[in-house]
Amino acid sequence: MSRDAEILVGLSDEELEALAESTLAPSAQARLNDLLSRNSRQVLSATEQAELDRLLAHVDSLTVLKTRARYTLNQQTAAAGS
Image (tube, rainbow, N blue to C red; front, side, top):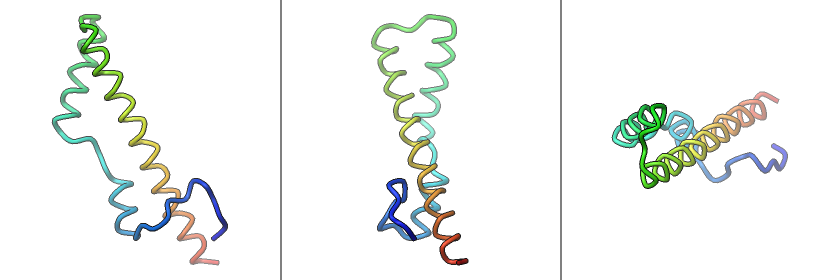
């Protein structure tokens, strides 16, 4: 497999699959849902808005990590088939 900056190295297939399927903790997801709902009604305090921003940044980071894990698995599968 060629050197690719998006490939996650040093992880087993099982670890990559776990990353690819990971989700927010239920309590964090519930809090995010609450903050998003309240934000749509424009009733968040500045502190809550900052918390929402942090949670959304966390979700974005998790999405990137999950995508990289799936990409790595796909690249490994393609390389094994070559």
